[in-house]
Length: 89
Image (tube, rainbow, N blue to C red):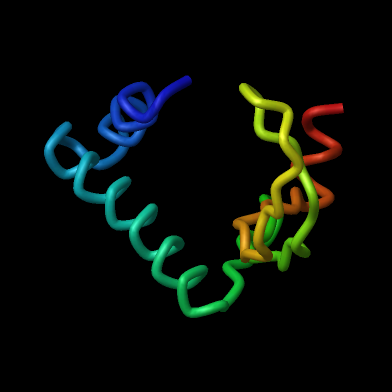
């Protein structure tokens, strides 16, 4: 399923595809803004979106094989909730 498929499914409930597109875009942008502020977004029964700190590490340049340093950064992370885990089982 991609974003277009998700919009079609939401449109079945909302009414129009335009309203569904706006709703899906709003949900994604709200989650993105929360993660940018270092907040987490918890959807009970589904899961939690949060950020994790990734340490600096050494890596290799894929073309030359030279050792490079990859800087520390924050990355988005999704932790599925118990209900989602049980459903997918």
